Amino acid sequence: MSVNRAVLPATLYTAEQTRVLDSTAINEFGIPGIRLMQRAGHAVFAEMLDRFPNVTAITIVCGAGNNGGDGFVVALLAKQKGLDVQLICVGDERFPLTLKGEALAAWQQLQSIYPSYELYRPGMSFRGGLLVDAMLGTGLSGKVHGLFYTAIEQFNASTKAVVSVDIPSGLCADTGGVLGVAVHADITISFIGMKRGLLTGQAVDYCGTLLFDDLKVPDEVYEAVPVNLFRTTEEDLGECLPPRSKSSHKGRFGHLLVVGGDHGMGGAALLASEAAMRSGAGLVTLATRSEHVRASLSRCPEIMVKGVDSSAQLQPLLDKVDVIIAGPGLGQNAWAEQMLFTALGAGKPMVLDADALNLMVGKNLFSQFELKQRNKWLCTPHPGEAARLLGETVNDIERDRFDAVERLQIVCGGAVVLKGSGSLVSAGDASYLCSAGNPGMSVGGMGDVLSGICGAFMAQKMSPENAARIAVYVHATAADYIAQSQGEIGMLASDLFLTIPKVINGQYE
Image 1 (cartoon, rainbow, N blue to C red):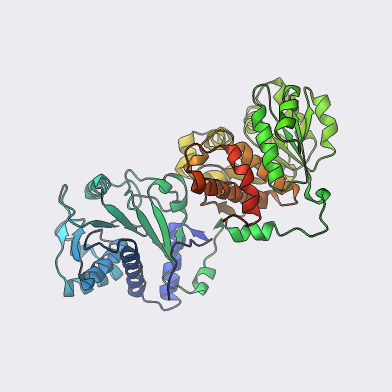
Image 2 (spheres, rainbow, N blue to C red):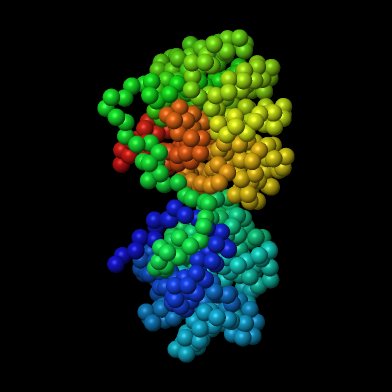
């Protein structure tokens, strides 16, 4: 039976949770650990043959842990297949004596048939046309040092393709951070539990093509380990946004108000408004500076545009709407403060983005609202805004994005999107990761489009939690389709407008 390892699971695990899965499979379901190791080695070898069918020589560099044990299995399979195998072990002359458990069993099986191996020495030749990284697994703690550091640098200096076993050596499985230095892999095959750190932060630049194999672990093992982090998928989109009934009318899909667009920044609020229309909101009103009214109507006549130069002009609009987006192009001057304070006073569900978040921090507003109201909010900070919200640096945020988004949710309430590569959503009890998206999204206006999608989904009666995770998925997937058709560089935020409905309706080919 064929296995599609390119389909990643929806449930994501920490390194410790993966170890519990492993021990549960062994101790409670009677699957020998060496069998799991053999399955891992077979999975790596099968992918190698499939993706590099012409390879005749491989170099496998192994550590002394179970990650190295997987590498020993690969070496045995490659030898049996007739490939030229260079097995390199990182350690000293006592290396075989440091092996334990399943890694020792795999080593003994290999040595009984093919006893040749080399100890790693800096600068030694990697003779194989394909390199296999089986040095350091998920048990790594602290910075990489010594021979491992040098070996990883040698991997990265090579122009040969690299396959990493379970995780690129030097990455933190929990955060995706680089522990001093890490292997730049072309392919990474993760086992049993999909390690959460491989999908966000720095890790996305190191994993290459990410694959997964559950090693035939039964579903009951996974049911025994509680988790609270999930990858958003197309299936989630279908559940949260089902097909509309034939008797539908615009009143059923909410009235959204976008507040923003100070002098010279009218485009941001307009992008959010048009994105909301493209995402299915029944009605969208844009409250912006009067100077932007004509251009906004010309760009998108489906939007109702109101010039608001004072809070008195904004107030009458608030009673008519279901959800408010505040922040795109809002600025941080007196007009912006009036608009934000007036919008907050309406007590409506809100999307807070960009300058609205900066004003909330500057005026210490989050602590002035009860949790009951904040739980109706959806906040979408990028790492810089997140750092200001938590009083930290961007490096602090990026060091552990999972911890950061959970702390942001405590401050903000409701749902929080921590934008970036592998965007995260936290709603308190559960968190979500989006593995879609691409570097072409690194352009002005993308965040405004996301806030518009979030607001449209809230207007359609989604909870802040569901609106956040589904909006992030739709936004990123639409950008991926654009990248497929025209490439990443030169992508505009407005390019997504014709693709968003196709993603939502499942009609993109």
